[in-house]
Image (tube, rainbow, N blue to C red; front, side, top):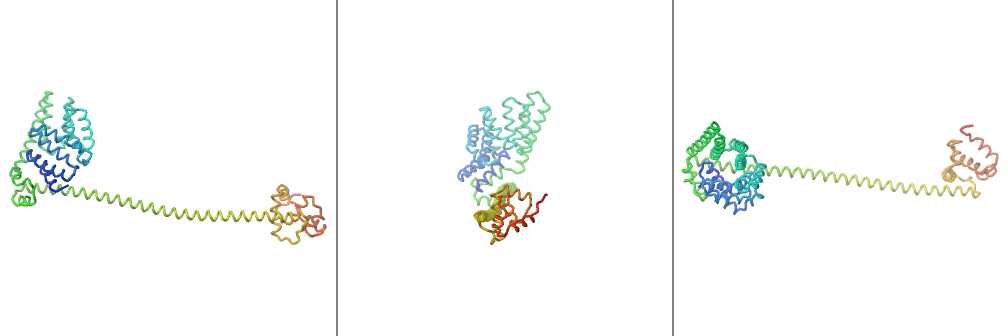
Length: 389
């Protein structure tokens, strides 16, 4: 927002408070011109609302509708802090013209903000529908949160009229006295600050030179206006800084989350690589074991066929006996299982002797395989003790 536009808006608001509607309308127009040049649509509805209020007080009813209808296309661009006010003044325009639209805009106004303006318009709407009890409730809420003595007085007058229609003269007198108090407070404020003198010292151009001249020549009232403007600027700067801090904190949190996610992904990749290496080693071990097992099975088969074809075991090592019997445990599974049940875990050479015996080899044939005589075979068999007799 431009400083010139903000000053005009602040001065328009101050003049409304002091019931200086002509001057307020003048500053509203200056503020709107500046905002339109800047293309800033966020807060224009607030200025349009003040302009329509001034026109209403000055009896320019056509201009009231003109300014309020201008708010409708600005609603999508309006800042959330002004949306409740915007919906309220549009709803007020449609009361008794199109009550369905008035209800829609009023509901939106109360959704965004429950303040003096929205409550006052809600009172107008219910009064137009003949729901005086609800209108009275809304107007009383409006008075409780309304800082403007002029609108307080108008609302008190509306409530007093309701009591007068009901014949409740006690409450009628009460709210008429409240109306008088509000007008007295407004008069006292105007007398204290002497707005006519203040406005005579402010040139409508609001150039920097004029402002400096005004500061040096104006009374205490102009200093109060400047202080109010400074407060507005400070509030805007504070809100902007607060938003920037919130954005910074959100970005910082998102960056931390992103860094954590990257670290987790990196860790998962390392674990995945380790698991892949482990799986590859296991596959290699399985392949080697499979190849070794196949080789051993082939070797055991050849040793058995060597015996079967009339060969001897004279030159065999312990490993040869083990390989041969490993093959025989597959080839003669039932027989080898029977031998193991009868004799337990005996040496491979003894297993071969008992297998040959089960295969109906006589002592002489077994002796030829082992390279010993029949008596030695008989002695070897005798030394193999069964588990159960």
